[in-house]
Image 1 (cartoon, rainbow, N blue to C red):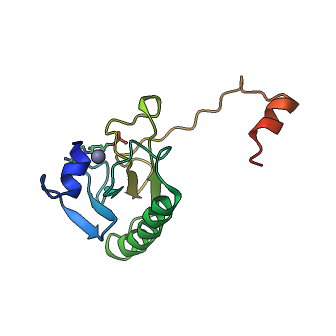
Image 2: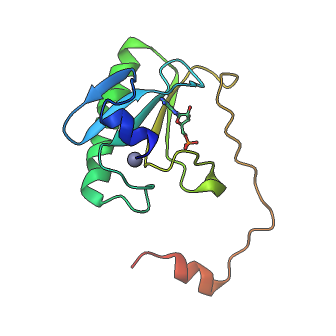
Length: 133
Ligand code: AMP
Ligand code: ZN
């Protein structure tokens, strides 16, 4: 059983901030900012790619409610909501989770760089291939 399944089953303690039958939200053990929270389905899926759409919907409903709640109690200046999928994207725990990260300023604990890659080009065929039909 994976570490987040154990947290969902209350076999490993966590600082839970929300719980229902399907979802648990708890504070990250190594927070990058105050309020850094993980939102997980109780059912195991390796990552977002495997997760069913109803669960994805419910996780995002809870994420929105928690964001509004944290806005009131933590008064950050922004938020990041993100999910790492697979090792190449930095996933280290293979049970789907969304990081909800309150942001205070650009020099807080999260460094998220979007380096523009000039070499990225698209052919017409590639652009067409990317359209979800
Ligand atoms: P990721 O790299 O997206 O897979 O993120 C995994 C996150 O899980 C990291 O931010 C860890 O700090 C966090 N984490 C790992 N174990 C625990 C735990 N027992 N309780 C709370 N957070 C954890
Ligand atoms: Zn699991």
